[in-house]
Amino acid sequence: MRATALLRSPKIWVFTVYGVVIAVVLTMGYLGGVLDTDTPAQRVPIAWVDADTGVGAQRDGAQLDEQVFSGSAQHTARWIRADTEAAARELLARNEAYAAVVIPPEFTARVTALTTPGANAAPVPVTVLSNPLAGPAASGTAVGVAAAVLSRLSQQLGAGLTPAGLASAPGLLSDPVKVVVTPATSVPTHSAGGMAAFYYALVLILTGFLLAQLLHSGVDGALGFAPREFLHRRSTRAPLPIDRVHTLLVKIGVLAGCAVIAATVIEALAVLGLGMPAAHPLGLWLFSVLAVFTAGVVPLALLAVIGAPGALVATVVLVVFGVPSSGGAYPPELQPAVFRWLGDVLPMRHITDAARDLIFPTSSFHLTGAVVAVSLWLVFSLAFGLGATAFYDRTGRGRVSAHERSWQPA
Image (cartoon, rainbow, N blue to C red):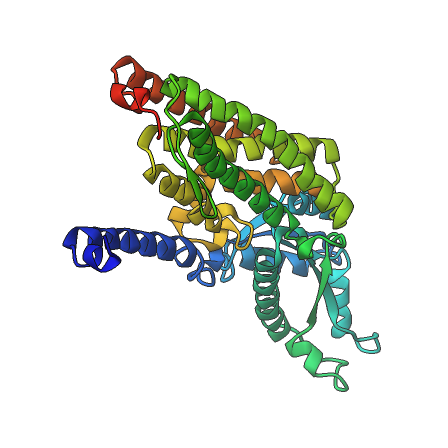
C-alpha cells in the first residue's frame, strides 16, 4: 500500500481534529495565562510600614496611610499593613508580599525641615524593599506600583507645604519624597536571578513525565503488549499472562526506582555541577524524589485507564496549564482568575513553592502545604489508576484476547 492511497481516504483526515484540540489547548494555556499580566495591578501584595514618630502632634506619615488604605491609592495594590520593618521583611520572605514600603521614623521631621528657614533642605527618603526571590515579574511590578504611588503621594504632600526658606530649592516642595529601592535580600549566584526554583520544578515535572512515557512503552514491549522498535529493527512477542493491575504495578515499581536515581542526579548536577544554591539539600532531595515520582504516576495512571489519549491529558495537567499557572514566571496575582485557581489545584505551583523554600534561605512557609498537595496528587493518581484497572480486570476487560495470548510470532 502506498501513502497516496491512504491520503486519499477521508478517514485518515480525522486526525486533523487532534491538531485543532492541541492548538486550542496550547494557545489557551501558554498565552491565556500571560497576555493580561499587566492589568490587575490592584491584586499585587505590597507591605506598608509607617514608622514615622512625628513632630509633636504632627505626623505626616498618617496622611500617607490614609491615602493608601482608604483614599485615592487604596485600589492600586493589595496593601498589607505591617507594624515594623522586620514584620514586612517576614512577609517578603514568606512570599506574601512582593515589595514593602517603609516610612522612616524621621519622616515628619525631614518634611518639616523643608519649610524651616535655615534648615538643611534635602529630599525625604522613603525605602521600597524589593523581593528578588519572588521573580523579576512579581518584584518588578510591585516596585513599579509602589514607586508610582509614592510619587503621587509626594506631589499631594508637597502641595500643602509653605515655601518659607526654600527659595533656593523650590523643586523639593513640589516633590519632596525620594524613593530608594533596596533589595530585601541578595539573590544568590547561579540562581537564575531568583527563578531557580521555577526551573528546578520544571525539570522535576518533565523528568517524571518523560520517564512515564518511556516506561509505559518499554514495559508494554517487554510484556508483549506492544512492539519494540529501535532504528530499523522491530520485534514482537506473545503477551505474557498478566492483568492490568499488575502491569501498572510493574510500571509504578520501576518508576519508583527511577525517581530516586533521577532526583539524585538532578540535584547533584544542579548543586554540585552548576552551583545552584540549596539551603536544605536533604529536604530538597526528598521532595525531588516525591515530585518526580508523582509527575510520573499521573501519566501512568491516565495511560492505564484511558489509553493513548492519557498522554495528552497528562500533558495538559502537568505542563500546558501547570507551567503558566505555577507562579514561576508570573505571580498568581497578575494572572486571570481561572489560572489562579488552576495554580491552587495543579501540582506545578506547589512544587515550585516547595523548591523555593528548599533552595533559598526563606521561612519555609509553603513547604508543608506543598508536600501535602503533591502527596494528595500521588495518592489520588494511584487510587484512580489501580481502582480503574482492577475494575477492568474484574469485568473481563483484558488488554488482549485469548487468541492473541496464544499467538507466537513467526
